[in-house]
Length: 379
Image (cartoon, rainbow, N blue to C red; front, side):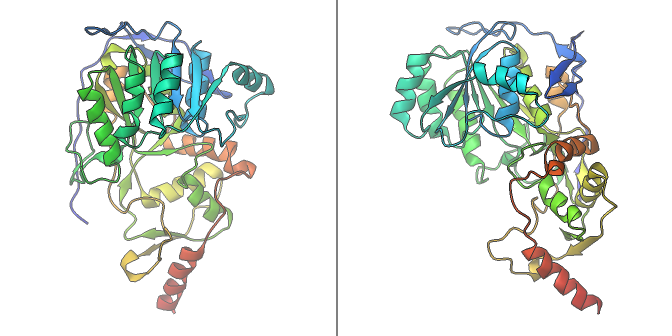
């Protein structure tokens, strides 16, 4: 593995004012500081302030990130509309959410049914409705964003969910917002979207999460480890297991999305969003066990080049160092993650997998290939 250099970036300290604690799905969010927000204004643009109620459109919003973001927006008094194809339920009750809170949320959320790839429908339906702010949670290609901008010429802010996967692989870590990006990345559509937003002169903000985890995660991140821990199986980890990665809790990401709304410091800016600490693959396996109350797991390392897994994915993370600095978001926005890794994994386990709910059934096919060869080598 290439030598890794970890660089620490210092950011100027912002002016901060105290803020009250907020409630989120039965879990107190420690938002002890809040950035002083002023109205963002540019030539020909309407003023946007986070303190006033906005007519907000969320592209997507019926799963994971959108579930938590939409609740925070409704709690702040905004009128929230979800644009979806209508194939999934428009709302669902969150784990540990009271019936009263869910009924209140459900009564306030609005829905606009359509396919975002039907560009003419997007233009006509959005222009008829008119929205102040767009949160684009599921956008993948720039061509999907153009009709939204065309339909909303007076749009005050476009807030985009990008990905830290856009960065060019480097030996100088962590990734910072000014780092080189990879135009051949599988997330190149997100890069092109950021470029489009800049070229159109709109007030935009882009958040680049690393790996996201938390209750109702549809990607097998922590769930992959929980399945193996529950079954009492060894955990197969590629190569040395000292590859460094980073996870950010979905509720912390939702809070960051709220803090960029109407924030002039977020205008035309990119922010990495994730947890504050980095973790090795081996360390992540141990953290999952600790969070869920399982004994420390047996870890088996293997060389992926010795196996043909076909189309199956043997491990849920990219086999490399992959982590990003969140110092810019902390200093500029006054944002700070509530969850450390073990506490966040415990929150995910207790509110989801520990209740017997998960997105994918356990599949130990590739594990058995790895462990079978390991046993032969040991005999």
